[in-house]
Image (cartoon, rainbow, N blue to C red):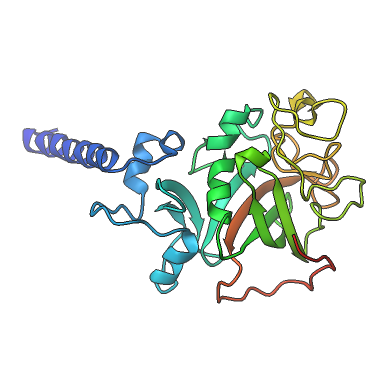
Length: 283
């Protein structure tokens, strides 16, 4: 390797390190623990002018005239900006949870972990109950979309409108409205004697469920359930990393490989055709 080439490589590394350092200095993301140092270079909409960031991924998608690509963006649903993964391919959805079967990310976490999020925005993660509350606590109602992919790459979708996560004083209670989709309604229908709608959030160190034991601690093949809106346990649980569970669609017999939870304002103009909604009224 000649001297000129060596100097060029050193300068390139120096510039990359300076850009990365500058990005980290400029940005003060509330969930910076969910980004690796290299992820700062991948942030698509870094803004150094000090103006407020978009509220969610749908605003970014709209402002880009629907030309944005999937990736990590900065949004600002409340006072502090946060990093999120935006699903732009499906129309500007803010991803609040993603899990892969047998994930290396541990979902057996404490209340504090679930409050502020964990994992990697480039991989499997839980965005954080506090940020979910900030996103959905809006004059504009939000939709929750659940996306499931089984081992045969079959995709099933389910949507709940409206969708709200209450504040910490209410134990991050989940509130769900009308359902529509190709997946089973595993959150608002009690076909397995469990009803997740209107339940408080439970973790291994904070038991808010309706069972005589802590549902988050109950194990399947040695893996605890993780945090979730349990009833007297679950008709669905997307946070048990060895078995993604969604009634008949995802379970230990009908295995699923991936699951996502994502949100978007209900009045967003782009229409995605879904099945007719089940009969269920307000939150």
